[in-house]
Image 1 (tube, helix red, strand yellow):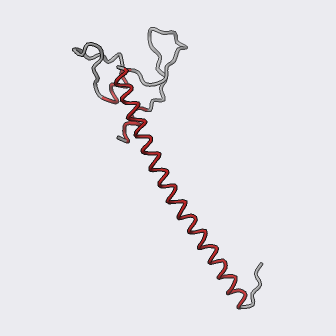
Image 2 (tube, one colour):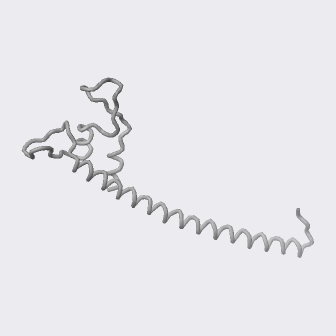
Image 3 (cartoon, helix red, strand yellow):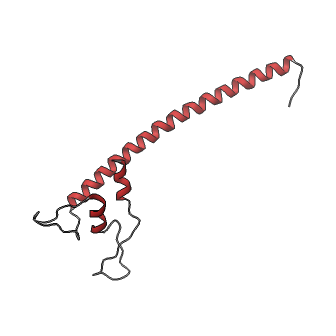
Length: 113
């Protein structure tokens, strides 16, 4: 499912032949959509039309993408929480080691600034 988001990301702003040159759209062309996700049926169900994207298919892909992104965010949050715990533990060890070093230096009569 993680691959789904990568297939849906589209940096292209397609222009349709029937529209003026300056008109751009967000998202994939129907042909790019069909290439990324397989062949979908549009209309009466008897023939394929690769020049259209059915709203049900687009909605399904977007919902699956949102679910995938949500799962990825949850995994990243868990990883960050774990790394934050490790960082805090390392900081506590450093404070303890600094305290021990200060005690050793004091015992040896060293005065390090």
